Length: 288
Image (cartoon, rainbow, N blue to C red; front, side):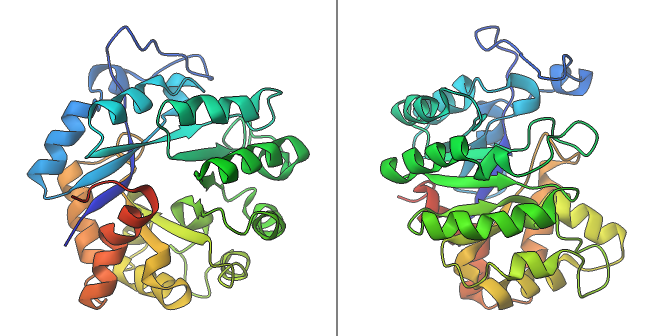
């Protein structure tokens, strides 16, 4: 079985990649214990993974994606780079071209501010006129899109995403962290209606991460219950797993163990897709 981590945040203490946190500070935990590309690769080898998607840590580097693209360039058979952009910026479309030239395979968008108290209301961050130029560039360049949706903007964002997918039907889009659907509560899960309304859009994929698993386990629910639910609605070829390492606390070994346990109720085929096959097809990484 090919295992691929579809959501690994990288951080380095190399001064060639200076911190530029939007919030003004970087935690001591991140400063003192960075997850460098080399450290991640060692963890992948130790736990039997073939590759990972290096996701820009915007809380640390802002929109300078240099470290993830340089890391992927150094280890192209093991890593692929996902870059974060401000899709409302006047030069956002050019930034897509810039990072694609440097090897990025995916673009990730999130609401500036990133939480209920500081985030920007509305859906302009991914569905406005400026943002659609980003989608257009990504589509022309063959990049996939990724959306980080929070609970506080989940419902309106999922509604807006339907129209965007109709405009760009050939562009794969991954919704992170099960789109913040509240799978840590009893079914029917709050927010699930908006996500399931996208099940008939074949380019929409759903990522489940340790962030989801941690909440699910705390609520006394087995992660396998939620993964089976996702696969029953979207198909295993549209579900993928990522650790969210460095963002979600925990040892990498525990993240991988939990991921393996989460697919215990699936067929061998479906388990292989969720843990790596879907990511291998989408991001072209981790396979010979």
